[in-house]
Image: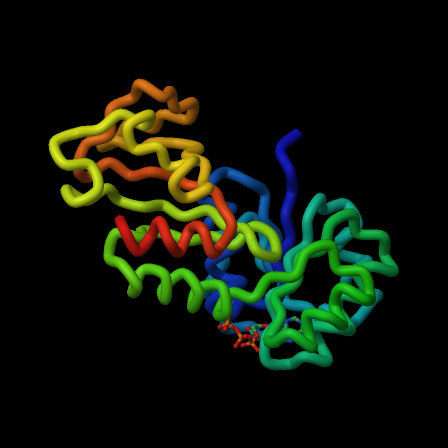
Amino acid sequence: MAKQYAVIGLGRFGSSVAKTLYEMDYDVMAIDTDEERIQEHINHVTHAVRADSTDEQALKSLGIRNFDVVVVAIGQDIQASILTTLVLKELGVKYIVVKAQNERHGQVLYKIGADRVVFPERDMGVRVAHNLISPNILDFIELADNYSIAEVSMSNKMVGTGKTLREMDIRAKYGCNVIAIRSGSKMNVAPNPDDIIIEGDVLVVLGSNDDLKEFEERA
Ligand code: ATP
């Protein structure tokens, strides 16, 4: 059976998570204390329910334990976000993802058992900053402490009239690995040294942040 998701808090972030999952045909239960938010979402999720997520009994009666993943997207009210996470943990929810306001909030969430903590504003800031360094950086995703994946569009400066991956020699020159090549609407996820890269192709590159920076600056 497809995974079932619950999203608590329908601010901009929670709403976007809930609607996207629902559009991808997953079962989504959305929970918020605010009746207006519930009404706004009725046609965009499987069930929209008005409830206070800090109330253990309320979550229990919604069968929250049966959901594979619960996303806590309460931002401003840090106390409610922490209490909700505790309740979900106590009820035995398998996988809890929580949006944090700041690093301290994130640390507390991990301490009380959140499986994943996300920082949407911080992460989006990082992505936008990388895009500003060079318009050729289409996206930038931090993987672990010092490692990221960048999507880099190839300029004429980099590939001229076309170069093979072997000629570009990205691993030796920059210490980065090309993990995929997007050419128009085609995605090549098993790149080969003889694949030819032309201007406008997008390389998906994995590397340390320092190495990626070198590569980004030349792209
Ligand atoms: P965003 O930045 O994503 O717009 P935010 O960080 O500003 O959101 P809030 O607006 O504080 O987050 O909260 C998001 C939603 O969570 C609101 O719709 C609010 O009604 C709901 N919410 C807050 N506390 C609770 C609670 N205890 N139970 C259920 N929903 C709650």
